[in-house]
Length: 294
Image 1 (cartoon, helix red, strand yellow):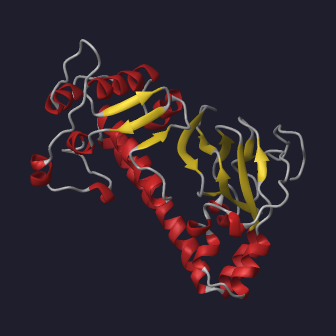
Image 2 (cartoon, one colour):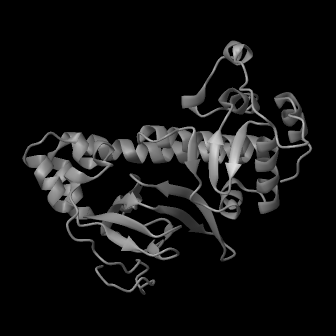
Image 3 (cartoon, rainbow, N blue to C red):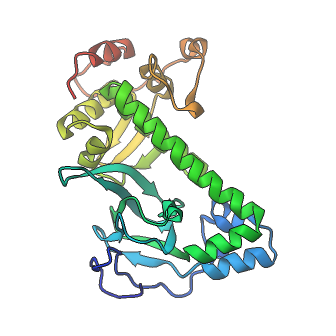
């Protein structure tokens, strides 16, 4: 894979260049990545020997292609990717986004990759040989549990997304998406209240199942209501209680459950609304949801 050209190869993998001098011991994601699940013993050293130096992947390049025989898995070192699956009419649909620290291609343990993985921006990934990883996991219970947990989390996330698309209104889907990103950043020791959206609004709309114009409209309404702050792709969650209130009536992500009494006691932040626009009550936003087309 250490090919300096950043273009798709016939096999479907992104051509990329290895980065010399990388070390798990110096990596920011070490505490949430594979070495963290093992003691500093021979098992940990064996695992680190499986991890190749981070490789560069150009924006728009495919790292993996659906249907390709699986022989590698990756950990995203930095950057971002999107997962796409093919539809019967030949189009592709975005089914997931991946940020630094995420596994890529773990479903390859079934024998083939199930989705295309495309870089949203210039990225770096750490490569592991899939068969050697499986062999080590068979000998190290802690690693085996970690892999099973990662696959279970991916399944739970997919089920939650399926429920959201089938049962939630437009605004609820977008709020759920922002809160899910917030949770993931918090897990990585990053700010859960201010972060950059790596994906475009068009990609968000495709993932959530509605048009670009609707995505922009909902973002603008939440911004004018003082619930979120926006500066290009930079997002600030200003009123988490209001975001949770919008989710009332829909199943919330399990990490964001809050009793109704707690919401009633929550004091909204004092935020200046957009100039010339009064901040509408959250209830008004929720009432208008029913009338908003997808």
